[in-house]
Length: 353
Ligand SMILES: O=C(O)CCC(=O)C(=O)O
Ligand SMILES: [Fe+2]
Image (cartoon, rainbow, N blue to C red; front, side, top):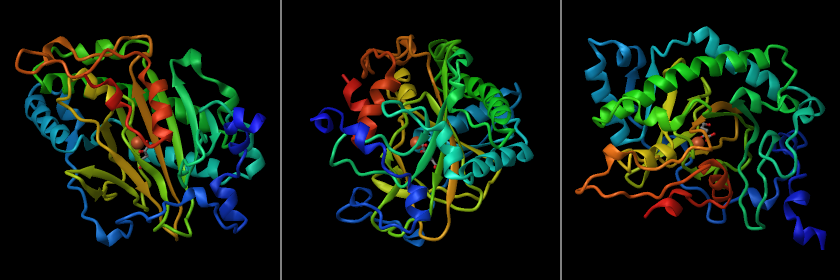
């Protein structure tokens, strides 16, 4: 009886992917796609020609116009870009990678101190299971709300490695500066008023950090590290693994591999809420993570979303007689988004007019 009422309670106690791997256990069937996953072999897919945007040029009066144009074409063509000269040193980014790797390398009992609760997303764990036919992602993750600061729940924040909290705080403080520059430039690139996205984003915008760990997978042809999804954020900033690729974007119905040859660039992609605010001029790209059987991979995604109390809708300048409003007004998109994600559906469909 209780099982039927609260299936997630039972299921979410399932082992982490890392435990399955450590114990050499046969992964349960709910990690596998029936017909397999196409195109996981590295060589079988084309590499995405990632546009590279120089963040410092976006802010300098003499170069801003040109760089904003580049940003415009990057976002129109693939919804993502690599950012360089973003103001964060390579040494510091490597520290972020290092504390991430150190956290996932801790003994399980130490990591479990940060375990997410059964019905919560925040904390350490694997997929929350919402239906019996859900196919699980081959990943363990630590998910933390970083901003607004008064919403931090430190019971989920690791105490080990010792510098983890401080580095996360410093990292996200630096990312805030980038978010502001990028949201302004995105508005400018559509000839909109500079602050129109930023105003909707708000003073109490939400920043959520997701530390992803993808252990080697015995059947990369049958499972995915992250199922195809688009992010529910305004923008997402991803620090990829330096040595192991895995992220892929869907463009013109074809999967493309994201290259990792710029280890100190930050990947930035449009999220659904920018698609809504821009009235569909920017599209939130679908992406996935594939697994491999040999090497573990980590990534840190920071989802930058508008204040959940703000109304998010197409900004005035993006709506005209020739381009009618394409999206409804939404609030707290992120919470709605989550249910859809686990079911492998796209929430943006629900807010289209
Ligand atoms: O692992 C990556 O490179 C991307 C992660 C991602 O897409 C996400 O966490 O939403
Ligand atoms: Fe994502």
